[in-house]
Image 1 (cartoon, rainbow over the protein chains, first blue to last red):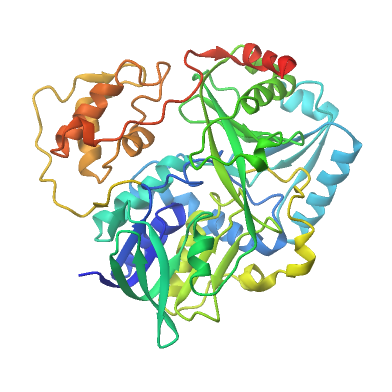
Image 2 (image 1 turned 45 degrees about the vertical axis):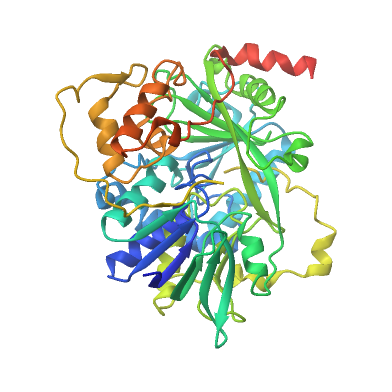
Length: 388
Length: 108
């Protein structure tokens, strides 16, 4: 009984959402997960649902989700995913940041997204909790936040309830073709699964699985760390980020979830399990204390970390692979894959049913890299691009 | 390596118990019944129950209720408690003010 219409590798937000939408159309689905439900980037992120500051290539997907999925998701799943569209404030500290914010405003305008520059005076009156260190800011009212844990598990709970078969602890080793088409999946335990179409929606581990059908994707792993505070009275509703690299939100629960990455360990951390490093949480606390002094006296109760599966241009790889008909992928979300996650899941479910994507994803194709050119960029980080 | 779990396997119906309204996680105010119901929604690991309902996610970080949450989930799955993996212990051991945590930067 290891045969289904569609087989999904990876039970993160994308895999669970794809399973949910496929079941809605009565398609039989099996989901294979090497670990447990949503234990990768799907649970380990700041919960940002953002259109601003996106690369134009992925903007369509993000906008599709914000317009068509997020506003009604809690109602649809019958589980409160805590989505609220209360804007995103990006804090800048000098003229170079102001220029960067202006660039983003111009890009956003081209796609009809409203984003404004806030000058010092306005910042003092509108966002009094931000310190004087912040001299300019970008404000995007259409951005928002959600609860990544409840979103991912919410999709899983409803997909399972509607008959999707989930198997956790089942690590996929390779995909095999039959008559040129992706058809079989073989796992570490020796089990074989078969399907008409295969959706691969994993983190870094997906790279090796793609290698098994002769496909390479240019990506690397990077450690990202987060601190969580005790709950506090409501200070602000919007998502916040800084040009110093941090981002975060005050959750519905009242705790602040604030993340960043720093130091060499970001790239050189080589443990298989993600744990907090010695230095990063302290650096996050220090830099947040400078930007939002009101948080200084709040207690940190938990720190955690996760992988950013970063493609070489920090834009996700989404879509079909011509060389392997029947295979559809979402990989290398590059640290900003939660917001578009539900939309990506929906799009992959459409592709797997032989229907076209509702938005243009052609520029997210896996084969877009100039391999020789990108070799030099292997260890170069994107400037101010680590907002989640 | 995690053990293989078929999430569609039958673990039986949710049967209400007399003490379902007892508070198990005091920090986040989660009851025994809520935890048991979550297992029947398909959350078969301690981490998943934690992420969905928040038991062991409060001020004490599960240092008080962690073992009880684990025992309740294991019992619901009809498994020995040792078979259920604990959640990851996360630093700091005691809550620390951000300012104090941030002061460490000078020593790094």
